[in-house]
Length: 121
Image (cartoon, rainbow, N blue to C red):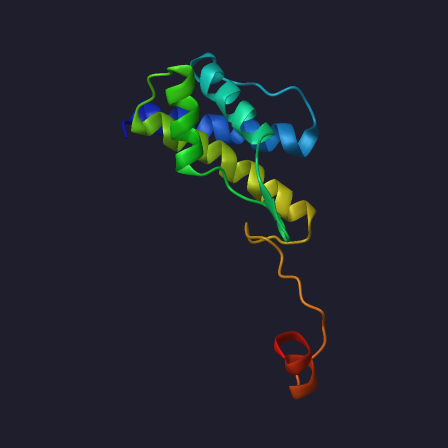
């Protein structure tokens, strides 16, 4: 990526973090408006698993931009992924995980032979 691309990626991620942390209207740089809108559309259709939200997959981005005929370059995709990572960091922090990963969900019960047999027969 070029220095300008790096700077825009960082500005977009910072705008996302500030928006999520304060609830204020995001201050999206003009050059990143389209990427922000693409991210918002992809995020609205995000999948979830038992521990929370999944990241937006490259395949989903590729399918979206092909369907809508957006001529995105690899550095644009990295900007969308940076927005997604900022969003995921906030979502996982709200769920009690501060490491940017889904929180581990355990029963708190130690495994023993009876519990193993109950699950696996």
